[in-house]
Image (cartoon, rainbow, N blue to C red):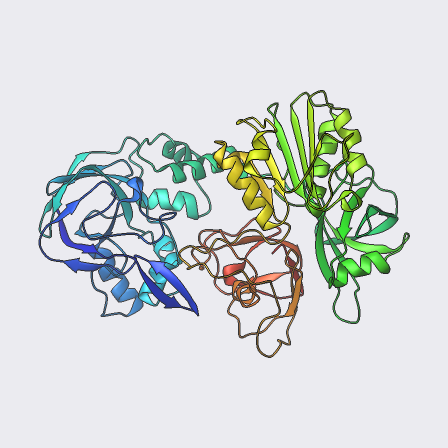
Length: 570
């Protein structure tokens, strides 16, 4: 019979790590006597990052003494003590290749149900001082597993463990873990996993995405940069100009999705060419592309576009990309923008107007005044083609004239937005400065909109995913501190940073962090693919082979370095 050897608990604490502070509950220690197991955790225990750990489906983490012995031998360690793998229950028996998702076990007074393998994250490596540990757990098929509490009760070391019900598909923890993180997935097992009611919702969604092929959608466009010709430059306001682009030989351009952006590479000054990204602002499936650029006070690229670029010039353009796109549907749509944030939602409005869509459309734009409001007449004309359009503009520094009932003086507030009659089932697309999007997001959440109906675009790098890291004040991306590197050029296109590579950084991820570029990661060892980034151009090599390679044109920045000059969507 399997046996409970140790009950381990620990409350979250702040731990210093790589110059940052991590709030984590990974430090667990054995306790004596019996402990009460509740629905969300064990008495005296807590989780620091509830987005990835804890909750009803991940109340208790289990790891095996046999795996402790295995890792002690593999790592040459004699200091591994129960709780060091972050587990609440250390057991003798219950190997990952025999325990199945959906199995139920009685331990002491409590009954549990297996819900998923361990979440692979960097904190187990941080706890053990082994940075690659998350990858090793998956590669060696020894992840451990989470359980939810079916019946609350007391447990203690020495309790026997009894199987009370077998999981319906008899899919082992090790096989479930491999289905998500390793290549060559068995489609039969994938569908089997989706038939397990006990499998946690997050893992069910991941497997659903794999089954339906959402993670392998075909990519359109062209690789890297290609030359395109500037056909026209049109001033829209005193500070915004539109650049129209076409192919030099007149070959058709691939269609873009409304809301996507282009990256442009320009020879600015004597330094390396600079790369910036700008939203497409017109009908994305027309014969040409149009981007609209605001001149920033100290922007060398926007300044070059406004003062130096001329019709007839050739510029390097990367294929349209981005996930902030208008989704198909028949329900109501709200296109909400401030300042230059109007550009991607204007492309969406073009698409709706071209189709004369019957779906209700709310067009809400915030501008300083009429003189600085880009595309006011164009948007008004497009809205006139729609049978159910609602137009409203906020001028923050100019009072409207009596004949302009759709214009309000001031900034959007919850009261004024509610008066516009935006329905609770709207799909909202919001683009503008962070404070503006915070106000709009709070209003939409307050109206009962689910998060999947609120689409936002802050035209910069994607919001960071750094689990457990204590938030710090946002810093504008910059060159890395210290002496500049002397290696290949790494360009973070969405952040506007080009910097030489230095061997002082173990990975592209570490270089991005040194530049205070928002990054997205979890395992930091090539397992979870959270850090996957689009490669606009260039090549990389992996310092440690990932367990599964990303798609062509993508890279895992947590375990890679450049082998040529490289441009990334970060």
